Structures are given as structure tokens and as C-alpha cells.
Length: 87
Image 1 (cartoon, one colour):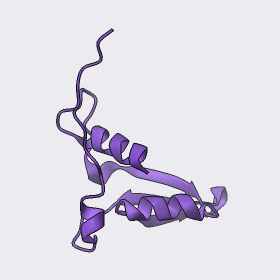
Image 2: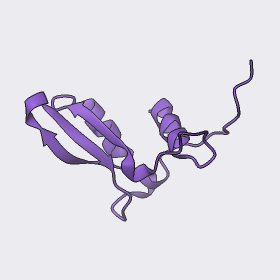
Image 3: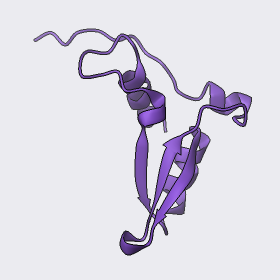
């Protein structure tokens, strides 16, 4: 979960390089309907099911920034220092 938290934090950080950052409300994940572990993981990070795609047996989840998040969820995206990559 930590790796996913760091990736989401980087992707949405104003300090990220272009073409980032991505607004949190634009984040979308597609998960197989039977993949309960992935669904629970993204729910812990504040994502909610927004659509079912029956043809592909998938669910679509989007980040929902609302008052519904628990205190743990609201601070669940760990942040790190963003530094330029140097060879």
C-alpha cells in the first residue's frame, strides 16, 4: 500500500513535473469485479465505485474528496520529497 500511496501523492503533487500534477478528482481505476483485495485497497485510499462495466466484468472507481472519509483515509496518502533525477 505504501508504494501506491507514494505514487498517488507524486501524481497529484503541485511540485511534480509536467504533465503532472493530475487533479485528484480525475483519478480513475478499473478493477476486475472479482478482485476484492484491490477494491478494498482503493476504498481505503478514498476511492468509490462509480460504474460497473459488465462487458469487461470490471468496476470503475474514482477518488471522492468528501466529508465521508475517515480520519485515517483523509491522511492516507503518504508524501515524500520530490527531487529531480540526476545521473
